Image (cartoon, rainbow over all chains, first blue to last red; front, side, top):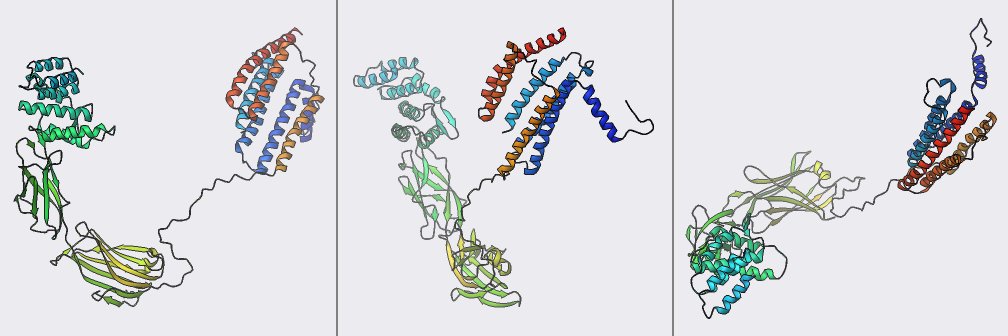
Length: 119
Length: 493
């Protein structure tokens, strides 16, 4: 780690250090999940922009789509936390496979509800 | 049924006069419970020569207590037929025995029931009604009577001053040998016995006092007849009236001077007015002898000759019973007349229950001048307004299809980006196992999403849940097996 002893690190230095640490330290599995989370976030943002442009007429459709994106994001974050090797001490009883199974099950329920509500 | 046979046996052996017939009847009656069989037994017993057997006569009292009293009518459960046949049998037997277990009140209530019975179940009702009424009218023991007013004579006028009353039996025949007298305490008729015979009576009014009077009467009936419940007759005395002291005045409010004034002795007035006019019309209603009275209804009506619209005002009476109508056209023109100018015919309308007929008097022809106004006159006519048809809620505007398609396409872009990023990161499907569990799991997941797609396309939640439950169990089991093998493999590594 190279830190200038005399002055506080500038913004650019912090960001570049964050990026380099992320790409070296993070296991591949977590990077995959992060990519998935970014995709979900983009989808949610696009839905929101559409709603701002054209209004909320079939409000139930907008709500169900947006909440589907938000809930998928939350489930993805959950999976990431539970499958992070650094957190093994906290999640002693929950193996990675179990976390994945929970993720799949929750998604099935979520999609059933969303499809019902989307109208 | 035994008693019907008994009855037939009685009729067939009547000529021989067998003295043991009463014994036969008593025996048959011991095993019978129903009201109808008792009624037929009474009828038979009344036809058999010789004294009526005591137990049968005594049983009348027990049977009659089985009847239900609802309000002022009394009847048996079996309805009109049972009640009528019971009356025929019991009254015939009571007449033969010389005493009756039925009381005055019971007989009146039975009569009320038969005449008011509303059972619509068939033609035999006419027969049983007549059976019951004839039994009540033609027995020598207890006949209920009724007081009726003949020829609508309860409306008394100086031209038709006589009240005609009659005492009748249940079949409507006047009761011979009866008498009627008017009680003292009312002012129209002289008190005392009424003249008349054979059940039809007449009395003439001596004093005519306007109004509705209750006249008390008392009936004297020969023995065997029950006096009627009704003891008062409502009579209405109707007398004509005269309209007097009429005064029709038009006052100009701004100048405070009288524009027109007439007492209508030379016919209806002709007058003109505008917004600053005040119209006053006074009158009083007097009896023929000169005293003022008040009436139920006194109106003044303005009828437009242009559109036929009618505007009514109520004439108010003060303490001296002088009626007046006071109209200020500054407010009334728009409020009551709808700002409709033109000629109006003005009439006074008087009505009351004690007037021989309603009176309509033409008071004046009044022309209302109003300034030209841009608003059309209010439509005071009572014709139907235009029909309102329901307009459904218009749905909100949807965005143009181009924008919707654009955003639909835009949604798929991040998915592509995701696939590229995953490929770059090195995600691969090399670890995909084609074992049974693996196939079942992935196949099951695909099936679940196909079921969801089917639901979205059209089917309802019930079919979805039905297929889903089966699929979910398979997928769950397969997934559990698959993931545990992967975990075991990882541990082994």
